[in-house]
Image: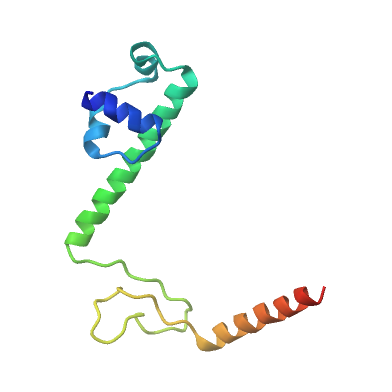
Length: 123
């Protein structure tokens, strides 16, 4: 089985594809899938959509891997405007953890959830 046919089978089954699989099908059109590979229009359309999906996934993974190799981290957003901390613990790389949650906000949310659960259990 050629690489192109194997890649086509992966696309038809909506399986994970490698960059080699995607490059083997890069010049493929719906017409080519219909004429050369005996797919109907819906199957060919599904393959093209899956190729687009997997191309985006592979590009995003490649960007993430390159970014991760540099040792950089994404800065976590602060949960509230009054938080002056960076959201990191002492000795950690900047942006490597989520910021601390305000304890009073957490207790308020827990109290509301418990109140709703008690109200729903009485019904």
